[in-house]
Each structure stands twice: as C-alpha cells, then as structure tokens.
Image (cartoon, rainbow, N blue to C red; front, side, top):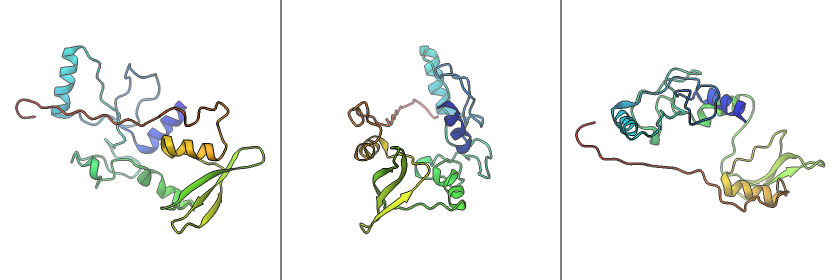
Length: 187
C-alpha cells in the first residue's frame, strides 16, 4: 500500500519532516514541515526532558506553493476552513479534476448495495436519490469508503468480501485525540 499512500501525499501536498524512526521507512513528505511555533517548542522540549520520543507531525497543509494552491499563512483557522486553500481536502485536490473529466458528485445519495458481475467482481452501485428514486451506476472501479459501519453494511448487503465471516464483527474507528495544556506565562 505504501506507493498509494505516497501518491496521495503528493496529491494532497502533505508537509512534514521525513525520517521519523517510529514509522516504517518510505518517501519523505513532498513538502517541508510547517513551523512548530512557540507552544509547540515548549511541548517538544518537555518531551525531550522526559525522554519521550516526539516528531513534528505530517499535515495535509501546504508549507509551500503546490499544484496552484497557496501555502498556509498560519491564521490558525484550520477547523473552520482555509481561505488560502492550503488545507487539503478532496474537494480541492481531486474533485476539480474529476469534474473536468466528466465526473459528477451527487449529494444526498445513499448507496443501497454494490453491484457485482458474473465473476463476483464489483461493477457499479445501486443508489437512491433524495426523492427515493433508485438508480444503477455502472463503474469500472468501485471505492467503498463509508467508514467502519457504512462500509461493513455495504459489503454485507452486497455479499462481498466476507469469506472469513468477520466483516462487521469488530469495531473499527478513526480515533481523534485532543490534548489541552495550561502554561505559565505568555506563549
């Protein structure tokens, strides 16, 4: 999978510092790391004093111009949107090309099941629009990216990829970690 992750890093314009010994070897992020900042340096120094490993995290945020997009200007508004287009998301990095090639995004659609051909290979989807009308969309490639619960539901209802009987039997989440800290004095 590594070549695909590395290609995605290039598409999104990931910034970071390569060589983190906690991760397997691979290509360095395509863009240099974002600045750490005063508070980040305080946390890094505290980790170093405690003997804990720390490394600047990679980010899907541009540290330099990339693919016609502007770099981050450090406004700190990532959670609510990026006026510069520096924070990568599929609507900025992939949808324009997708639309230029004739693709379209259908909002409010719910996929009922993945369609299969005579060989049992995915060949499209059946989906329902907001008005409840069913549609069949043929496809050469079907990407199932509906997170843990939605993907398991689609695979099970479509009778795909469950020869082990384990699809949907184990909880899988995309965890989010948040840490807050209080510092004496100004940052």
